[in-house]
Amino acid sequence: MDRRPFDPETDRIVTVTLDPNTITSIDPDEVHEWRIATYDLIDSNRFRPARVKAEGPYALHLSIVHNHIVLDVRHPETFRPIAAHYLSLTPFRSLIRDYFRIRESYYEAIRSASTFQIEAVDMGRRGLHNQAAELLIERLDNKLAMDLETARRLFTLICAVQPYATRVSEQDTQLPTILFVCAMNSVRSPIAAALARKHFPGRLVARSAGVRSGKVDHFVHQVMEEIGIDMSVHTPHTMDELKASNFDIIVTLAEDARAAVEERGIQASVMEHWSVTDPSETEGARDVVLTAYRALRDDLDRRLREELESMLERASVAV
Image (cartoon, rainbow, N blue to C red; front, side, top):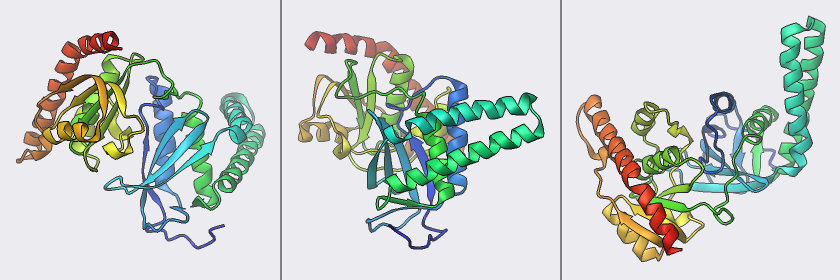
C-alpha cells in the first residue's frame, strides 16, 4: 500500500472528463448531477497513480467498458496517458443500489420528516459513503492512491454516471462507426464528432483522434456551449490510442491527418477528406478568434447535415 503523505500541490486531480461515447445522456437533470459530482471531486481531493513515475497534478478521464469503469489518468495539459485502470462494478452493485435508496429517503425526509429523522437518514448515508470509499481504496490498492474523502467523492461520481450511462462497445455494436481525424484532436475533429452525435443520436458511434497529442481548447467549449453541446467531456486522443483499425467511415480534416491514416493502414468503407480551416491559427482580438471558431463549427454542421446521411448509406452498401 502506498502510504506516502500526499503533496497538496501535485497529488491532486484538476480536470475530470467523461467519455461521450460510453457515458451519454440528453436529460439535463442527469447531466447536472454529473457536473456537480465532478466539481465536488475537483474542488477537494488527494490523488496520485501508484507505481508510476509521474508528477501531478492530473487529469482523470472516465469511460465505461462493459462492467467496468475505466479510470484513465492523464497529464492535464497535453492529456498524455499516465496510467489506466479497469475497476469492476460488480463489488459495488449493492452499494450503488443502496446509495440511490438512501438518497431518495434523505430527500423525502427533508420534505416531510423531523430533524431527528433527517439526522438518522444522513448518518446512514455517511456510513454508506464510508463503506464504499473504503472498498474503492481497497480495490485500487497499489494502482491509484487517494484519501478517504477523495474516494467518497469519486464513488458519488461513479454513482452519478453509472446507472444512466449508455454503454457502447465499438467491438460489439451494430451501429456504423465514424472516425474524424485532425492534427491534434483539439478543435476540428472533436467538434465534428460532437455534431455527428447531435444530428444522428443512437444511429452511429462517432470517434475523433489526432495525429499527435493536443491540448483542450477553451474556445471550442464556448462556441459549442452556444448550441447546447457540452465539450468539457472531451479528452484529446491520438491515433495511436485507437483500439479499432477499421471503421465504416473516416473523415480527415487536415492534410497530415489524411497522410497519417494512410500510413497506419486504417481502413474504412467510405473515406472522405474535408478541407477546413484551423481557427486556432487565427490571430487577433478575442472576438475575431471566436468568429473563426464559429465559422468552423457552422461549416462542419452544414457538411454533416448535407453529406453524412449519404455517407452512411454508401457505407452500408459497401458492407
